[in-house]
Length: 288
Image (cartoon, rainbow, N blue to C red; front, side, top):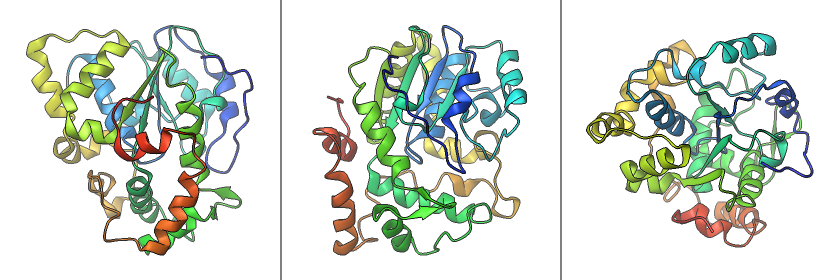
């Protein structure tokens, strides 16, 4: 993917410079999302397509690491060695804006997943609250967290949480017509999971026998993934278990939670997004 002006994104959570060490293969797959927009869901979908089965040879986090993350896999050499040892088609995740990635081979495929920011931020609060030992100062009140995000508040020093959402949205939207990039929306996966899985398979050039599709689709349903949390989610605090990670998996959860005053902060954020992006982020459908 052409990135004429590559930006450096560095903070206490992730570092785009780690991608300078990434040794790409021609058929690699990059799954890119803002947080809590269906990242693990898409990783599970891609795992089923790559292996042609719902069975996994390892836990999903080991198979598909968050390459730019600093708080896990801190030993970059060890991470690179693990990826180099993989013999299946590789699929790696990132939460970076598109302009934070280096130029990779033309045959690399990208899948970008978005979700209504109002739901994503509340879901992110659930995750951050359960990870509060690593991120002290996270408010317990979802509305307070909402205001922290949409007012441009910071965590972990001077890291602006809002940028983790708006940066990827704006930059991947600019690449929505690139044939290497597939734009997928969370709501569309809720409405037609099999149809979206077939879209992803087509984009990746993967053919699945018709008789195998029911198994793969069932494995990617929210309730199935929740029951299989131990294999699918990153390491979590033992006292909380894993199932909190798959929180609600619904849209519109912000209704009845936030006030008109809170929504005004959200409006300020989305008003700065490129034309057409807000409509797609809030409702899904064909991107662009």
